[in-house]
Image 1 (cartoon, rainbow, N blue to C red):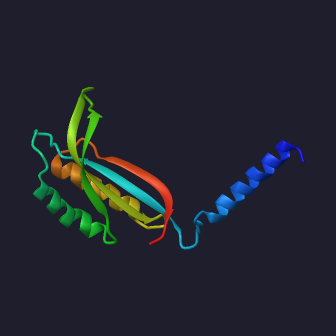
Image 2 (image 1 turned 135 degrees about the vertical axis):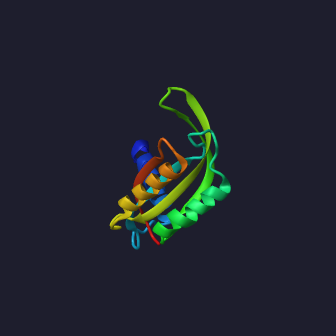
Length: 137
Protein backbone atom coordinates (compact mmCIF):
# COMPACT_ATOMS: atom_id res chain seq x y z
CA UNK A 1 0.00 0.00 0.00
CA UNK A 2 1.19 3.50 -0.81
CA UNK A 3 2.64 5.16 2.35
CA UNK A 4 0.63 8.34 1.68
CA UNK A 5 -2.65 6.43 1.47
CA UNK A 6 -1.78 4.52 4.62
CA UNK A 7 -0.95 7.77 6.44
CA UNK A 8 -4.24 9.34 5.27
CA UNK A 9 -6.21 6.30 6.46
CA UNK A 10 -4.43 6.33 9.82
CA UNK A 11 -5.08 10.06 10.20
CA UNK A 12 -8.75 9.57 9.37
CA UNK A 13 -9.04 6.64 11.77
CA UNK A 14 -7.35 8.66 14.52
CA UNK A 15 -9.68 11.65 13.95
CA UNK A 16 -12.77 9.43 14.04
CA UNK A 17 -11.65 7.72 17.25
CA UNK A 18 -10.89 11.04 18.94
CA UNK A 19 -14.30 12.41 17.96
CA UNK A 20 -15.99 9.26 19.20
CA UNK A 21 -14.39 9.73 22.63
CA UNK A 22 -15.24 13.42 22.88
CA UNK A 23 -18.28 14.33 24.97
CA UNK A 24 -21.27 14.72 22.75
CA UNK A 25 -23.00 18.05 22.54
CA UNK A 26 -26.73 17.64 22.40
CA UNK A 27 -28.97 20.48 21.39
CA UNK A 28 -32.04 19.01 23.01
CA UNK A 29 -33.44 21.32 25.64
CA UNK A 30 -31.65 24.38 24.30
CA UNK A 31 -33.75 27.37 23.39
CA UNK A 32 -32.94 30.64 21.69
CA UNK A 33 -31.96 33.30 24.20
CA UNK A 34 -30.76 36.87 24.31
CA UNK A 35 -28.07 38.05 26.73
CA UNK A 36 -28.22 41.72 27.62
CA UNK A 37 -25.17 43.22 29.32
CA UNK A 38 -25.54 46.76 30.66
CA UNK A 39 -22.63 48.91 31.85
CA UNK A 40 -23.58 51.57 34.41
CA UNK A 41 -20.95 54.18 35.23
CA UNK A 42 -20.70 55.19 38.88
CA UNK A 43 -19.59 58.80 38.43
CA UNK A 44 -22.42 61.32 38.34
CA UNK A 45 -22.58 64.63 36.52
CA UNK A 46 -21.63 66.56 39.63
CA UNK A 47 -18.45 64.50 40.27
CA UNK A 48 -20.03 62.40 42.99
CA UNK A 49 -20.22 58.65 42.84
CA UNK A 50 -23.12 56.20 42.83
CA UNK A 51 -22.57 54.56 46.20
CA UNK A 52 -23.04 50.88 46.93
CA UNK A 53 -26.15 51.74 48.96
CA UNK A 54 -27.62 53.87 46.13
CA UNK A 55 -26.97 50.97 43.73
CA UNK A 56 -28.66 48.53 46.14
CA UNK A 57 -31.74 50.77 46.27
CA UNK A 58 -31.75 51.03 42.46
CA UNK A 59 -31.52 47.22 42.17
CA UNK A 60 -34.35 46.72 44.64
CA UNK A 61 -36.71 49.43 43.41
CA UNK A 62 -36.06 49.45 39.67
CA UNK A 63 -34.29 46.30 38.48
CA UNK A 64 -35.77 43.56 40.69
CA UNK A 65 -39.29 44.86 40.25
CA UNK A 66 -38.94 44.68 36.44
CA UNK A 67 -36.74 41.60 35.99
CA UNK A 68 -38.68 39.08 38.02
CA UNK A 69 -36.97 36.05 36.44
CA UNK A 70 -33.55 37.18 37.64
CA UNK A 71 -30.30 38.86 36.71
CA UNK A 72 -26.62 38.93 37.66
CA UNK A 73 -24.47 41.94 38.47
CA UNK A 74 -20.88 42.69 39.39
CA UNK A 75 -18.57 45.65 39.87
CA UNK A 76 -16.05 46.58 37.22
CA UNK A 77 -13.75 49.36 36.13
CA UNK A 78 -13.88 50.77 32.64
CA UNK A 79 -12.10 53.22 30.44
CA UNK A 80 -14.04 55.26 27.90
CA UNK A 81 -13.77 58.38 25.78
CA UNK A 82 -16.33 61.05 26.63
CA UNK A 83 -17.98 63.62 24.38
CA UNK A 84 -15.14 65.98 25.35
CA UNK A 85 -12.68 63.63 23.59
CA UNK A 86 -10.80 62.82 26.80
CA UNK A 87 -10.21 59.34 28.16
CA UNK A 88 -11.92 58.63 31.49
CA UNK A 89 -11.41 55.75 33.89
CA UNK A 90 -14.53 55.00 35.87
CA UNK A 91 -15.77 52.40 38.34
CA UNK A 92 -18.91 50.71 37.03
CA UNK A 93 -21.63 48.19 37.67
CA UNK A 94 -22.35 45.52 35.07
CA UNK A 95 -25.82 44.00 34.94
CA UNK A 96 -26.44 40.87 32.88
CA UNK A 97 -29.86 39.56 31.94
CA UNK A 98 -30.57 36.37 30.02
CA UNK A 99 -34.06 35.93 28.62
CA UNK A 100 -35.88 33.96 25.99
CA UNK A 101 -35.64 35.52 22.55
CA UNK A 102 -39.43 35.35 22.39
CA UNK A 103 -39.83 37.29 25.66
CA UNK A 104 -42.56 39.86 25.12
CA UNK A 105 -41.66 43.26 26.49
CA UNK A 106 -38.01 42.48 27.27
CA UNK A 107 -36.71 45.34 25.14
CA UNK A 108 -38.99 47.95 26.71
CA UNK A 109 -38.07 46.68 30.18
CA UNK A 110 -34.34 47.10 29.52
CA UNK A 111 -34.90 50.54 27.96
CA UNK A 112 -36.89 51.62 31.04
CA UNK A 113 -34.12 50.44 33.41
CA UNK A 114 -31.51 52.35 31.41
CA UNK A 115 -33.66 55.49 31.27
CA UNK A 116 -34.25 55.46 35.02
CA UNK A 117 -30.54 55.02 35.80
CA UNK A 118 -29.63 57.90 33.49
CA UNK A 119 -32.31 60.11 35.05
CA UNK A 120 -31.64 59.18 38.67
CA UNK A 121 -27.86 59.48 38.50
CA UNK A 122 -27.56 62.10 35.74
CA UNK A 123 -25.68 59.80 33.37
CA UNK A 124 -24.75 60.67 29.80
CA UNK A 125 -25.15 57.05 28.65
CA UNK A 126 -25.39 53.39 29.61
CA UNK A 127 -23.65 50.88 27.35
CA UNK A 128 -25.97 48.06 26.23
CA UNK A 129 -24.57 44.95 24.53
CA UNK A 130 -27.05 42.39 23.15
CA UNK A 131 -25.93 38.89 22.15
CA UNK A 132 -28.01 36.04 20.75
CA UNK A 133 -27.35 32.47 21.78
CA UNK A 134 -28.84 29.24 23.04
CA UNK A 135 -29.23 27.97 26.57
CA UNK A 136 -31.17 25.60 28.75
CA UNK A 137 -32.81 26.71 31.95
